[in-house]
Length: 365
Image (cartoon, rainbow, N blue to C red; front, top):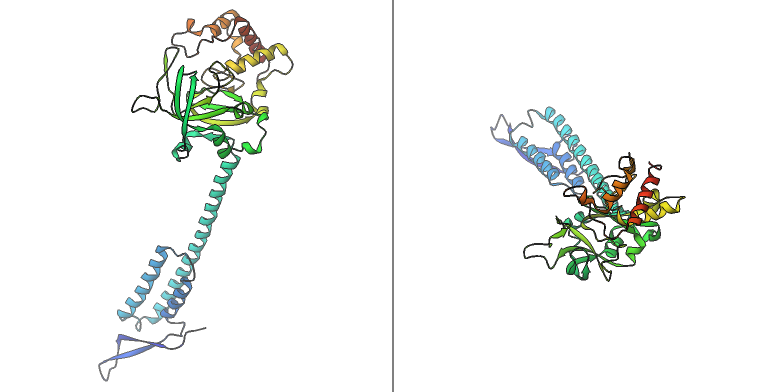
């Protein structure tokens, strides 16, 4: 429905030749030929669209100001036909701008919803935890004191500020939707150390991710670690336990920890386990317990030490007696070697590990 009535505007250019005075000029407000009519409709429609951007509002104000200025500059009566076309173009441009803004608003809303859904899905369905990312997001601040009576890394009673591993797994992985008996938990460290454990075993224990060392020297988050004469880095995180003896080697205590992964057995450890040889299985059990944290077989395992089977097996370029001696005492072969002396294995254990390595040399990827 068109608005009725007139609006009176003084236009200096409309001067009576007889009286030489300014004559009021009536503009029919209902006439669609007048620019002010279009802008009235625009303003009415604009404020029904929400939310409007500041930029769009400024454009409208500028356009209306331009219209009023053109009236004041006495150009309307002289160039009304040209201005009519200009108004129509301006109106069309503004309506296109409005439509574009509304479309962009919808797209931004869709993108925001998709981002939110993706973030939620990542939290619910993820099989890994990036500890550094959680720390940067402030999600590892809710810690409590955990005392380790016999810390196997520091060889003393230690106190830490820590977060329960079970809480992290339930909050940031899909552990509630899987059977822990079918999965391994893999701990990734900055230096390539990559120990793994049966997920069920660690869920049955009181495991924690330590974020700081309460007993560290003043001004430091962590005490230094000395291992085989080397200074090791504990930060940024360290996996600890309550009520687990230091000599229980089935439990891993990785420091310098950055990521945690849950991996299905069929995609991980089962791929490097012997299928039809009990003697090789015995060697695999020892390798899994003592070696896979640093060394990979067929690209499965740690990266701190060299891959032992692909593309060439270590048994193909080392002599058997020399390799066995190296495993028993690596420092007697190499200066400043990173590989520790494995004091908990016997010569018979080394024979079984070597047999497993030979077996795997015929089962490469």
